[in-house]
Image (cartoon, rainbow, N blue to C red):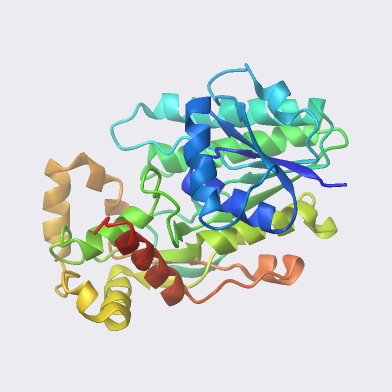
Length: 339
């Protein structure tokens, strides 16, 4: 008998690849969308990778409302909770936090009422980060929780930590027979299924189209969206994963490393990728005029790297090389004339 998995946020970058990987493994998938008008585009995007046939269906549900969640989860064996508001520096932080926390709790309440076997929530390493202004560090793992007193936290980072903690508190108190686990990805890259939702792939687009005149001293730990999908499924099915957090990441790369990789692997196609470093003083001055840059300033010149050792050990999961992830991301953008 085919097991059915509810994927929240079916229109997103991560949700799309999660649907693809589940279908490849023989599951039935029900994806949530805020409007059925989006169902056709999701099905078309997924069909570029795998034939969904009659194993992909859709349910209308919004994180901001109680409506639709019981119907969405009814009959499902598992829930992969991917949907979350991304937010930006101009958003109301309190509203962003409330949306992330309350939306997660809506999904969990419905899953527990339906007695699904396990819920896997996609959180973020923003929920297990060191103090952002602390010196560069390596080996940060799942035992850490982000200090909400850190004044450098953006509303988005704060929302991820608060939403995940609220989820653990709820499942500990009211989870019943439903098991729970979380997966915490770093910066997510890889091939895009659609240009409507690109997540961090937009950074690679800026490298390639010449809109990044110089390279700031910023960096991130990379994770491939396809490897993330595998980690989520393994966290869903591995018995020892119940009640655990797992970081999904690969190596840390400075923006300079990213630029070098693109130039070396793409040749002439990377002609607009910058070669000069942006002095930090210029970055700070630019942030005065561009609010979107202000949230990056605390990590300027600081590299906080994470480890996926636990996921590799417990789940038997292995990510692909980060350079391949970046190049595949670039190739997909070029194939869609996004550069």
